[in-house]
Image (tube, rainbow, N blue to C red; front, side):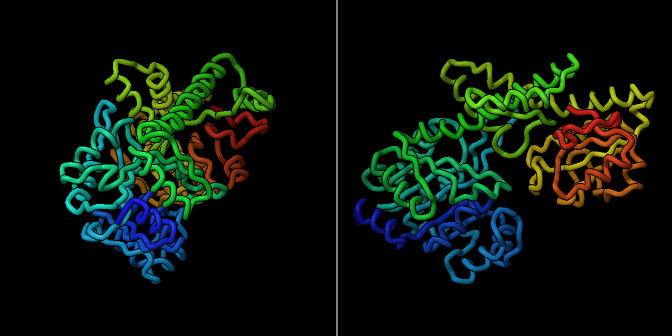
Length: 434
């Protein structure tokens, strides 16, 4: 089979696809390809995830359970712990985690492990695509040599490319298939093949000149966000010292129709991408003798925001002649994002953790997270009612879930530290904004 025959397989949806990793990236991808008419094998070493897919048990809210049920029942999606399906795969897409080690060093061990499995079954006329966010050069410097140890040559026997994931959990306006997909191969043929494949399920595919460029695209996107969030968080702290309402400043600045994009302060940054991805770029740049001061500074500012929130709560209670150590603090929201059941790197968790070290009583409420067991935290979610609110000395609004009754909170809470500007425009001496 030639390059043209493989391309025809993709065009005609006759290709067999393997997706390695059934998490926040892999599961939506696998389901979308299965819905699009391909036969997909979803591989994950986590037996619980495989069982959940087989039995249609929800664990990722962005993928409707009815869609999973439909593609599994039709045989279009087959979840498994076995890598045997790689023997006959036409395309393999890697969607595994890329966390950070100590001292913010990249951990690509999951990628390496997946690639070693692929290498065992690598065959001619096969496309390998990495989607996991990583530092520029990973595809060329790590994956390519490992695969070529098999004796097969990239560009002649198989094809290798990178395509950064761009999933935004909870974003109904831009589901997976509506987000343009950047693709970059280590050869022109690889780029063309991955473009042909993704065009079958995604509204727009954007080819770039190389895998390195594609790897850097994702890091630029999230570095842009990290730095701008860091900037506005620093301005929020500065504005507070100067007695200026930063929220009013941002709203007014946003009326400018050009040259300005509003970013908003908050209790910190969470999720899998923004806290981590820019540090991958920072690490790689240092290996080339370049230190990115912007990335490091923005990361430091954002990572200190939970501590700043606790300090503000302490100041507010002090002004009311209340002992911080003897207070009862109620934290509203535990997830990192509004209406998304995801605790990854949530600043709310760090706020709770910090409070537990200093405060006599700490409670939390989150309609999506019934209990928390994380580091020093071992708590159950409290219901939001008159008694719970009145029993607290300070309510810290960390995550602005739609399900919260904000009128009830305002009515019965003693003091509110609003980190999300929910009470925009409300004049009330019990409400303090970030």
